[in-house]
Image (cartoon, rainbow, N blue to C red):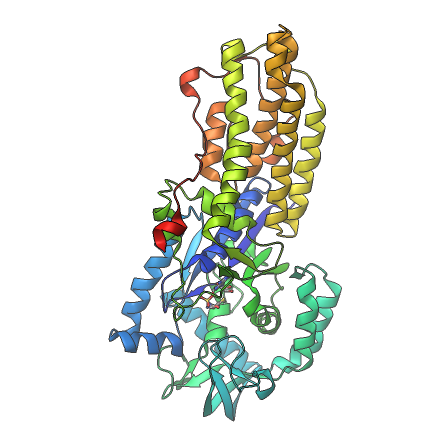
Length: 519
Ligand code: MSP
């Protein structure tokens, strides 16, 4: 069994505030982290903010404040948003943290001294949105960056270059040999195609052009170009040491199990990051998972369109007292690695259907029947093995398999399919009719089977909806911290389970209209 588990997100640029696209990735990662906490003894979850580069420098200048001040303000906005969404990260790294800057400088010097980095005069097309040089063939028919829709700047500089081409064959081999290195699998071909045309990459900028960055230690006229700085966060945060005197955390958690990122930055992670790690003599992460993008009402979110939605805005508009509904919606908004969409209508429909009508209502009506017919008590003869136990066992296994490939939405659908089964079982068995016919043991058995199944659903849904799961666990007298290996066929013991006053709905339908209020 795996003993340690390490998961990371991309670190967000701090030239603005977090929106639900950023939130999507953090929620997605948090769900995987919480799931594995129920399977693996030691788990570590890293997120943070990416604070250097021309884009940050320019935005701060426009605002008339110094870059560090802007980074402090905006990094806090990300941290506050993640708190609101119950993102349970183990560490938040900022690339302006002193320890990070020092290790990045050391990494750069190491690569320079061993000949992986060299100096070279260069004229190239720089896109500040991507914080990267683009090749002419990467541009669209109007000569614009295909991601940012803007003309890149022509830049002539003497820069340091990293010998990416030296690692090309090894990376290709690694991708071909390790089918789960890039997930979902359909993305691997895309990367193999990109690898065909790679060139060495610029890893520094002249300080005369970009001031806001980490200085090259042996050449203060240059700053380290953001991707080396940014990508290194995954190891500096753990306590990587260039001389091999790594921290305990580094020894325990590197290589990462999952690096969760958006599809737009897959090239940087699967190619650049792999080459850097190879050059440092470190193992590659087990899996780089590229998620799709979230659109709003089918449109790309952008400041200029004015359709950017902050996670807090959704919570405020619906007066949500906890983030579970948004977490659940986000987790299921896109099929494995595909793009997804947020709309007010879909949000309400999805959470009302799955969390209120289906899961919440099933628990509520079953507990109410237990109180009505048995004064809330489970009698010994209600407890027996049942076909639902077998179904649950298979579903728990299936959910774990989905999490092994970071497919959070399929896992959620599988959990809900178990709730559907339970609803069908109640409707088919009609315990209310059994009670009317005074078949009390049979009636009690049905209620027991469903409540027993709900304990398993509670543990499975906890990573998605931690607050709802807590409410469910309280009513089922279940320890929410149980691991999946603690799950037994019969989780509810005989005796008094609940009284009328203790029954509370776990999720109230969203009836307010965000859409109408807003527009
Ligand atoms: N700073 C770099 C990442 C460096 S990682 C070493 C960056 N920052 S970002 O702020 O532009 O994006 C951060 C993450 O958010 C990326 O994984 C990106 O794909 C994701 N998303 C940004 N907008 C998004 C959506 N609309 N939908 C889903 N994810 C999106 O890239």
